[in-house]
Image 1 (cartoon, rainbow, N blue to C red):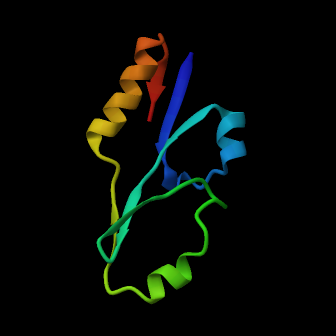
Image 2: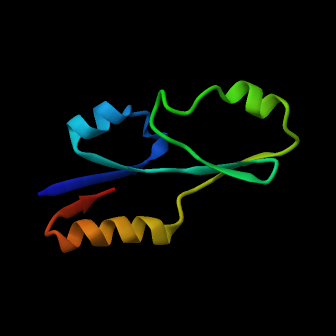
Image 3: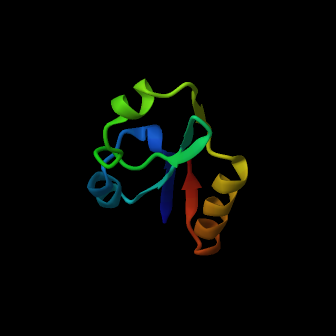
Length: 83
């Protein structure tokens, strides 16, 4: 089986990801030193108030080790992986 893995910037809803069989790994971001995980489209709330009242906002790529863990789990199940 071929498993597709992407990060949460893919723009999929939870239902779309499930229907397509896509594994979505969350990106993270910080707002004034508080870490947040990005979810599926439509599940992240309203960014505007959070960002507008903050002094520092930064996004963070998914760590290679997180992707590696997801890939390893899928490979161990016998899947091929496309990222």
